Image (cartoon, rainbow, N blue to C red):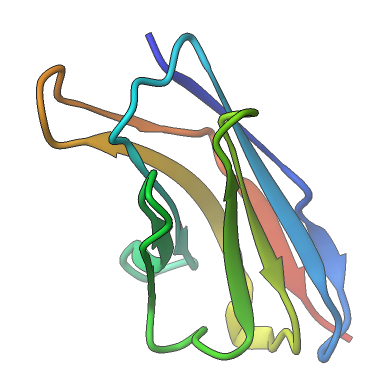
Length: 118
């Protein structure tokens, strides 16, 4: 069973940077898309960025040009470099792994808090 563990969240001032990591364990099969989603209090969970095993990337419109997702397939780990952070980026950030072909599965991490505040 795939398990995801996020790290790297914390408190940062507006304009600052943070780097999140998400490590997958339990045998991550090929052709698995991984990504980041976030959920602020009182709001729906939204897409931040996804990356396929082949490196195709998709960003949410609110973070494009400020955030960069990357992936190390040897380590089964993805990263999210967040620059020029804004207070509206404050949320719990969740890692997700999804495979759309057999064996189909979806896994979520426990989430890591990112707070942008002066």
